[in-house]
Image 1 (cartoon, one colour):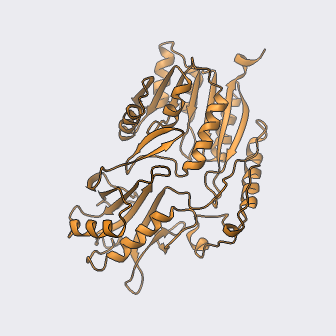
Image 2 (spheres, helix red, strand yellow):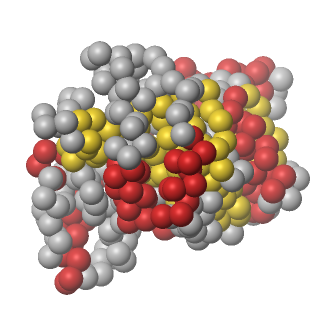
Image 3 (cartoon, helix red, strand yellow):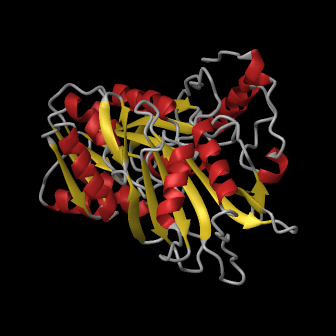
Amino acid sequence: MQIEKNNDLEKLKCPVSDKCGGCQLQHFSYEKQLLEKQEQVNALLEKFCKVEDIIGMESPYYYRNKVHAAFDTDKKGNVISGVYEAGSHRVVPIDSCLIEDQRADNIIVTIRGMLKSFKIRTYDEDKGIGLLRHVMVRTGHLSGEIMVVLVLASHIFPSKNNFIKALMKKHPEITTIVMNVNSKKTSMVLGEREQVLYGKGFIEDTLCGKVFRISPKSFYQINAVQTEVLYGKAIELADLKGKETIIDAYCGIGTIGIIASSHVNKVIGVELNRDAVKDAITNAKRNKVNNIYFYNQDAGEFMNQMAAKKQSVDVVFLDPPRSGSTEEFMNSMILLNPKKVVYISCNPATLERDLAYLVKRGYEVRKAIPVDMFPGTEHVECVVLIWKKTIWQK
């Protein structure tokens, strides 16, 4: 098990961890956190295969490259910003967080301090009045680029230009600012309308040697350091020889497929989100990747169509949401009959369910590797190699 203690950081304590609920394991030493996660994964997956030692971080703090702050006022009328208390819409005031990028936290505190002088009111969900709802900051781990997204309840932003100038004067490290308008009564953070107020409207970052464009709504793994470890293990498990055709299902902005492209003959990326597909195409061009093809379609339906045409692939990479895959998707994958499946999961419980479904249908789980993508929290990522028994039995 890869563990490196940092005695100074181990002494850090979060004063609001009980109220926030976001870091369920922060009160444990990092060594203890990893042991807890290892035991969790072992309990769920050891019945399928041997689970390798969890891969931890050298420095398990300040890793989140996307920071979202909700804004409100307290009983005294003071503006507060932070995160929603678990299971509620009550804002827990936070100035700094042990797992969030410190540059992002500092920018959010600055914005909060500017609101009074610019007479900007925070949005009141119950009354439906006020302007500022949320601030989201995204940071590039290697590029150092910083995007600030101001989520407003209206497209009318008084003193907009002066506000942006004042913010940039305090934080010249910001590379782009976007105004997002969310006027609906919804728990969703971002609305549909966007306007670039400064810069190019996106940031770029490098992952596994490839450059990716990250827009306000793009899905991008929040821990770049461990994502490189995770994706490296996924490609290692696939044991690619250079002649394969692979599918990157739930491909998002194309990260896994683009990273794997130099190891295979052809990559097919399938994604239902139209904006993500646009970003994926842009990312492929940005990296001069010519052997990848993206389709804006449901991945299960796409594989059904391939199977109907007697087409085949060698490996399917899938990285579904926390809810896991669906029986419909897995049935489509079974019909397509790839030689190998590499399943990247952010929820061991739904991973266990999906593996059980595949094992009952003739698949074998060969290897599972847990990776700690979310230090301080109870969440753990796993990458698993699966293949069809009949293909590999001698």
